[in-house]
Image (cartoon, rainbow, N blue to C red):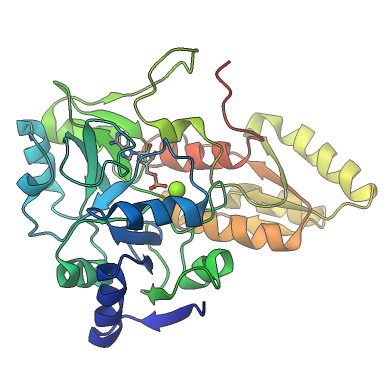
Length: 340
Ligand code: AMP
Ligand code: MG
């Protein structure tokens, strides 16, 4: 199969719509990362997404809809606080998990009685979603466990020859996946941190908790995606905190001396230190939103250029950095969480 990259135009949207209506999958841009989209009502399209990504079969998908879509078609109940959140963020990097049974293909939520829904703000995504008029499940358009894609080229690198069409909407400005917020209980609970923070949500609805699974055997994990290694470059990785900078420097020196191609990923404040050592550098920058936007792009560049990536955790750990740090930590773990 030939994979084509096409700019978003009425023609390419029509082509994407045709593919979706025939049960196929198409890569689409969003403001967070690129997604691999298929018809949420179509069992075999959903199955195809899991297959082409190699995604574990118990990791549910997010349904994406345009901003005037009638939610009651796919969710059973919407608590008042979720309505407030939707009013505050009619579009954007916020996924809300609702009670929902038998509304879309059972494969979407992997048998859970809930459905995660997002309304992306990206103009191209909106145009596509409006044209198809149905909910589109769209996990990040990367091979499972690999770094999420923030450009059409990243998608091609993972799926060349495996999908027919990538709609090119430019580089993603958000850079990390949406905040996933459970809206099935009395208060919202963040299941996955993102660009909309716990504080943002609490400011709107008065309260917001953060889900912290213990991963003990037998515990029912609310968001199965949390169990998996994720976002990982195809080189070796080691992650250090800023307090462990000296150890990181020693590791850089010893591994370089042993002949390994080693690079550093860090925020701007440490860049001159590593530059004086002559280290190839992937600089996350200074601003928090800049770090979110650059993280996946730099992880993908790093895997092309080094055998070992030494990453230094950004020092700021609040606000959107909770999400950035979570992705960086998951990118640098070696395995899925084992529960027995
Ligand atoms: P991705 O599509 O790769 O961005 O991942 C989607 C994320 O949303 C994963 O962490 C899933 O576990 C989570 N998710 C999707 N649907 C649900 C749901 N019904 N309940 C809880 N978490 C969900
Ligand atoms: Mg993903």
